[in-house]
Image (cartoon, rainbow, N blue to C red; front, side):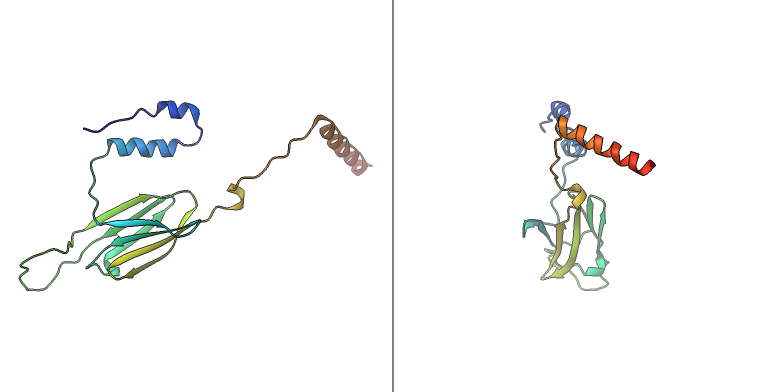
Amino acid sequence: MRNVYDLSPLYRSTVGFDRVFDMFDRLAHAEPRTDWPPYNIERTGEHQYRISVALAGFSPEEIEIVQEENALQITGQKHSDQDTAQVLHRGIAGRSFKLASNLADHMKVTAARAENGLLVLDLVLEVPEAAKPRQIHIATGSSEQKALGNQTEAAAANAA
């Protein structure tokens, strides 16, 4: 039995996190998912990450990687083998898969490579200057009047 949590108190005390709460809500009501193919998520630097997916037996032509806004989707479609060999034991899975992840805002995939049976994706968080925190100057009453007076004098000078 799954525990379902009520997130409504969080909606009242936060602003702008609707997407995160919706994601938790979907996870709470989602069907159980399989963890195939196995993968690792690593932090390689302050703003760098790496996702490694174990895809033994898949060629790069059989894998598709799509990033659309904050969603990353990796799909694999194994082409049917034309070998006539009789397989006595199949321990290497060759089934199709779809692996989906939600990415943070401003996260970008910078590289994808296949090495040693792993698909390795490098990601970087590139926050634009406009989205970075900035300090706001608080004007006092006298400085506001002074600035307003300067603007009025400048407007009068331009009109003359």
